[in-house]
Picture 1 (tube, rainbow, N blue to C red):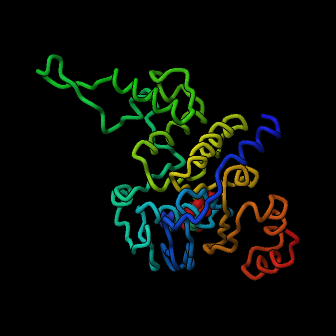
Picture 2: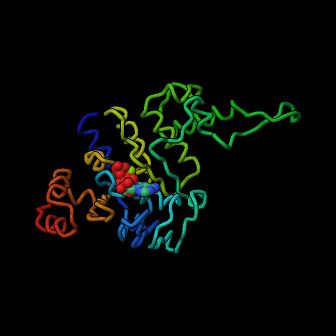
Picture 3: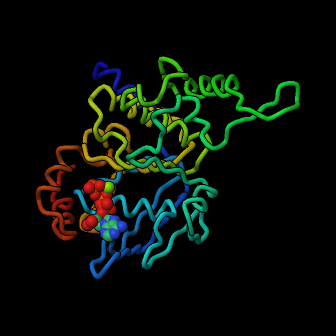
Length: 280
Ligand SMILES: Nc1ncnc2c1ncn2[C@@H]1O[C@H](COP(=O)(O)OP(=O)(O)OP(=O)(O)O)[C@@H](O)[C@H]1O
Ligand SMILES: [Mg+2]
């Protein structure tokens, strides 16, 4: 892709005008033992916004999104969903409210085909002539999978291919597509680009960019590579030893500056100083 066309792609995401918050997390603390893993994490996410959650290994990123996904309960703190207080008691509860999560292991079954993975656990059934034992309606699943993937701009060789035969980027795209089938309000992706090469990563970033363009789903993206964050995110939250130490719009900073801030030391005070002294 040329620089120009990439810029065009970036520019084509409409600005978030007056978008209300979908989610707020206030003073979330989580301890597994005596040491807190999250310390008073406060975060908000607007409708249609793409938020990049960055930070070192062990900073607490996955722990935090698992709380948002109902997988863990916070030790203390509160959450607000569409303006109302909420407690997600389980992943099922969070999903019922419109939270979908794509974990790093993707939870796809490699021995099944693309369309079988897309319909896993909710296969449409049919009976020949309306009688006898029901069996899965493969034709319908294939057709719907093809339509759905092409709507998301995902090109795959064939929906009857086993998922295990596809590339990492294609698998990641299928996991995202599956999560998007229920029309979630919040899509959480934990390191979707890890272990992907440049081309494969671009495939997944393109998909995120496509979703961002429509502004219909809010996205939290955990990414380690800052240039990828700048490519698709509206805002960045930097988590360091269980605290959000930086919350900044991507158009108010740059990759170079983020690196400089990170190098300046990661305490809250050091970051505040670095931001104050920056010529953005
Ligand atoms: N179930 C658990 N029990 C005890 N400690 C845990 C548990 N899950 C995570 N931790 C600890 O919490 C801390 C934060 O882990 P977490 O996985 O949230 O970090 P992360 O920011 O996602 O890191 P990475 O970038 O490596 O994925 C780590 O010190 C980890 O060892
Ligand atoms: Mg993690």
